[in-house]
Image (cartoon, rainbow, N blue to C red; front, side, top):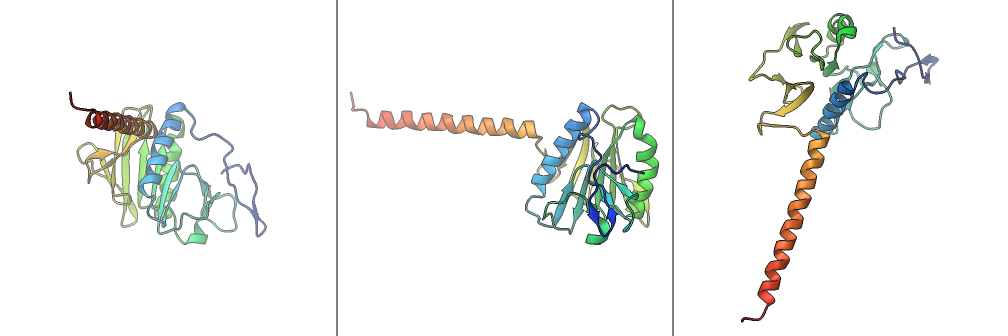
Length: 225
């Protein structure tokens, strides 16, 4: 049962918005959250009906403050991403998340592998992925499940990656990081540091071309010898 750390009144019931902690419990969890959430937001930016959430409270029983989860990463298709939400109440939008990713560790093993899996199954979450950044207990570190006839079945790996039908992407463990792979291009989605590096490289190339163009103009204007 989650502790209510911030109360928001609605019809006499108080629904939690925050767990009162920073994103992630360790540096590896924080990095994975950033490296998943930002690329997913870019990937789904052109779809107004694709909501991406990180550590957002999901309430699934109207009239009760006790039945909630806060997935590390979730994606809901067919639901407007605007206005910004501070919590997600399933009965308001008529459906639960389509995909959930939990960054798991030994201390949350029972909750992630047993308790949450049962709730996500009942909420009809189509795909459930678990990633163990420290490699404490999951072998392999990345495992995925897809809902089939009311129960979860393991997703088979393709070339060391787990395909997601919800995202049209593949998930791949890369050491301590969980990466997103686009099978259409054969490339990984860029992490924030990679995006900055690519931007700097593009700016440097533009500057090089500018100088090269200026030098060419100077030579063309120079009088013949």
